[in-house]
Image 1: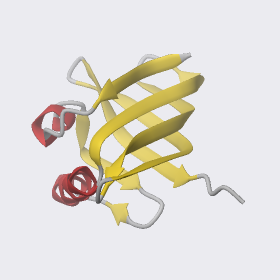
Image 2: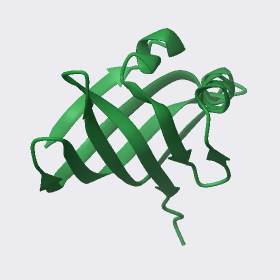
Image 3: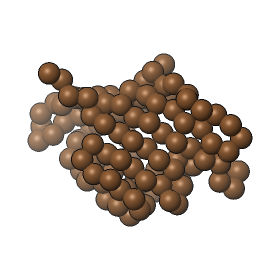
Image 4: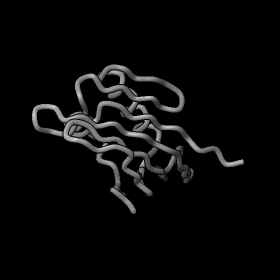
Length: 116
């Protein structure tokens, strides 16, 4: 099941609306522990991969209660780097918390799956 497949908008203001002020991202190559660092990482990725399409598949909700929820899923991406088509996939874990009546992402852990 896909939670979304889309051409990314590449507008961090839209992403930031979903993030908790204390969000922490574990990317495959870097930890970002402030919104400013997360924004820099997103913008760097968006500048690197042109015409990116991103999909989240096989979402499994691990925990759900009145104040928090966590899930894991497989992500897939494709796009162009220096005019050459690339694609890849990985695993993700997300943790959400309820903040002032809105669900916010407080942690995301992404790891790339390397093909042998």
